Length: 173
Length: 110
Image (cartoon, rainbow over all chains, first blue to last red; front, side, top):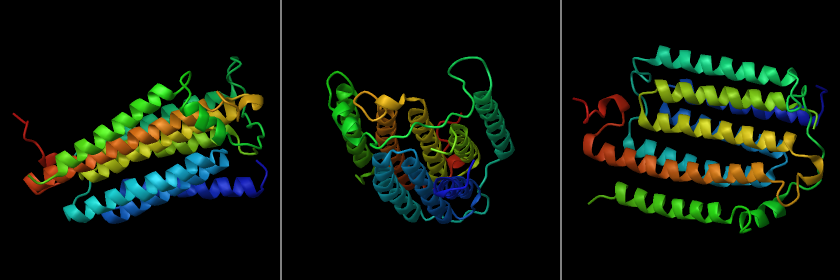
């Protein structure tokens, strides 16, 4: 892997992603964990930019960091249980074991990318160069009756139902 | 693109496994929700990485060539709905039981 701007940016954003995720997993103070969730989400947004999906990066920053993470911070402050004496439950060893097993399995699958005789599994593919990231294509595909119009409308309905449900669940009666 | 695909996949795998650990091991219900967010993000990263590297160069930005991004958009929508309802449930449980510790919410325990 040559050292250029792209690989440096990748290393930086990947470190933010994994470091933030590690913070969510291990930080004792829940508020700090939520802040490190923000860091992980920002790293993922940077990786989206590197993958030439700037629209998704923008949505990630607006929706995930701007709405979801802030909502989580609000609920943490509302419930006032920021620092607990024991952040992990009794089965945390099993949880760590399961995570490690999953990591090993995923690692083996990724290692398969370099081998095998299927045409899908070519060694270390590099992405084709593109000048346009396909924002216009994404926009017209999402409202195209032949493509994603129905899932798009169903997703809108799901959001409406979820928000009405959230309000009616959280409301004091 | 001078970064190979497997590096993106490795970052996503690490993020996903941290999410698994958080969901299985944390006691606080809000922390469990944060773990779910991490896992959804890892999946999104995988979807976009495979889209970027596995779509033919000619159609990657054409109509019909952005399936990976469209999938990721729907994952975003589902994640937003999930966290809204999940946090509303946490608030409702906290109001009635004064706790957000997942182990203490055991009304259905026999």
